[in-house]
Length: 189
Image 1 (cartoon, rainbow, N blue to C red):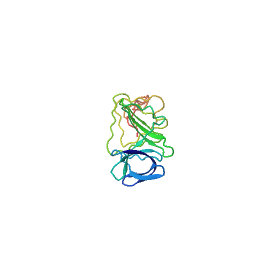
Image 2 (image 1 turned 90 degrees about the vertical axis):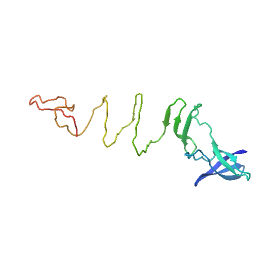
Image 3 (image 1 turned 30 degrees about the horizontal axis):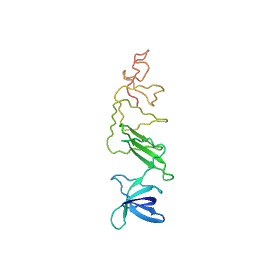
Image 4 (image 1 turned 45 degrees about the vertical axis):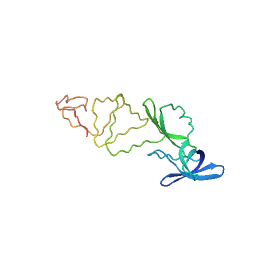
């Protein structure tokens, strides 16, 4: 036997404890069961699916009934989408789409932070583009680029000077036209 209840509030303990209205003016509390590794806190007025767990009339929450929100209603068979919701109104916020065609789409209205405590390797078989609508900053201990670099548009600016070694590309001419001394350097510091 199962029931559908309206969520009134949550309480966080060792479990997510839901207070729900199972019948008109009759409230009950149940633990929310979800797949391991998932903390999905329901919002008030969500509809909860309850299942009877013993002969004493106790029920457990085994899931939530989700309506398809406008903007997320183009999901198709084989897709798996995760999304967070705004507590004030329930509208989706950050969405992670694992699509049946193998594409991954992450859409968020706020900043993205990746915290990692080991090396990160990104391998792309095709072209890769990084676009910043404002400034792009790269920080690191030592940054190494393997492969040709093309600066298309805009000046390349670096404070400092290059000691003249006779090799490198940091000058317009390789040697002084008057003395023959080297003008170019390969390291700017």
